[in-house]
Length: 298
Picture 1 (cartoon, rainbow, N blue to C red):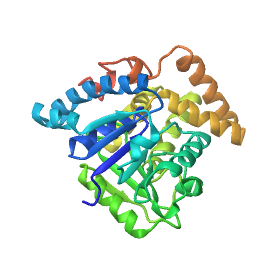
Picture 2: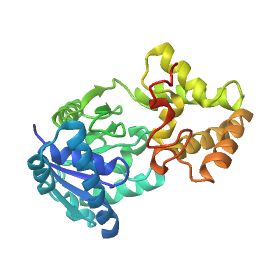
Picture 3: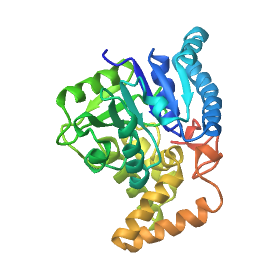
């Protein structure tokens, strides 16, 4: 594997998981974020993640101790990339924030450093010019809970160097991912191109008062053999994400159904802090949601 030193910029929901997953698989990982307080919170999250690795991956304490040794932290951007073979960007999902970040990064990163964005909604071609090195730039997208939902979608743009693309695919494999290379740019990659229409269809059925979330989930689970349905997925992804996506769609299309969906989610979930698994309640109550009960499909 060509890469040894990896920098992860952003220690939020996915950033800290990417950092720990990479460190666990033997890479030297520098975690960068905008201030030391946020980095201290990341360290706390790594402790929680360690417990998940023990339960889900049978990770030993020795392996976890080594992962911690492989992690360093800094809020100095230049310092964070001084030895980086690969930088994975997981900063907030805003074009302005990402472009500003890449413009600053381009001024301090060594010429050898490959840049990869974890953006779930932006195409790499939208950010490529800001990187100052478009041929060395790809999208590398992970699913949440990457240690168990271990997918890595790799998407280049028209001027990505094919050699760089292949190196990033190899990196994905090296950190335990099922690598999923895309042949061309596609909004939503593969996963969200399939998932978002399912979740939208579920919400449409609810807003039209066709059926309850439980009935819709039961239908999907029993008829397809899926372990969970769209509303359980929405709770896992986070209802805030669904709210934001529908808000953008409503503003763009002026579709009355989307506008009604936004109002429904705001009134019943966002305003009440019922955001899904993370807050203990969404469409279901956690940690023991109804869809996990043995008789849910009876």
